[in-house]
Length: 281
Image (tube, rainbow, N blue to C red; front, side, top):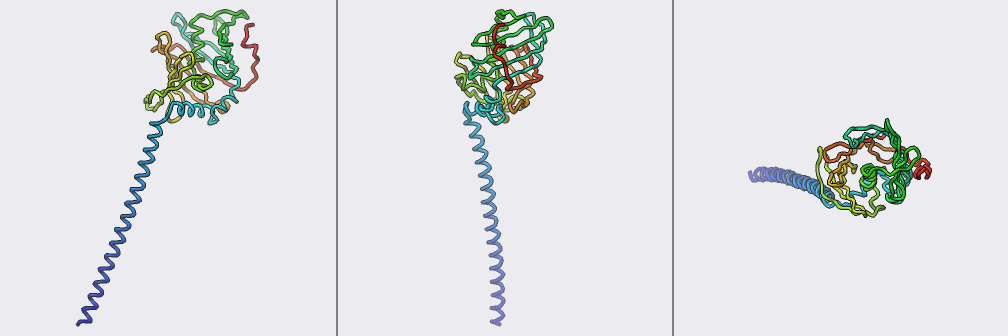
């Protein structure tokens, strides 16, 4: 009887010990899984926090330099300087004249790149149905050429031509070379696109505000004010030309009125350009 009782007691002990062992294993496994889940959650939250901190703490220079990298086809400033030594761009332009009518023209823009924009040389040929002429920027001066004769352009035409340079994309892409200052003015969302707002002010205190996608670092729009008129230029149809990023379609507004539209048809970089095309004939 006593032997039987010991046997039953022994089996009972084994069953209890087995249950306790299994329970301990389950608890241990659950604890390990909880720790692993917590670790993954903490890591995810930490990564998210770090990403958010990076966006939050981005500097104006980081945004500008990231944009330059993208426009240089990931080669940045070095690629832009090497590839875009010269530019020959052809396309169509629509402008609103002084009478409020829209005029269309074929155009050709020829650029001889310099270390900074004030030393740039640009010839902008325009062929309207009734006239063909060129505006030239050279030695920080603007003059016109019509039928081999030099003329002084109207003030509004000179300003528009100059604004294409000083309030254009190159004001950002060559901010260092121009001695400009940067200011990150915050972030904004337009048409579901998250944008950095970057102010670029050159040595002549000309200020241009750029709206840059925080995802692609492409410039979606720029703004500037002149004579109490707020100008906005939007950029569309981005594509790569010889490895560098180019917007093939731009539209300019003065306040709420469209005043200019440019569509690039062809653009090439690095071709030989004679310096005499930037001189008076």
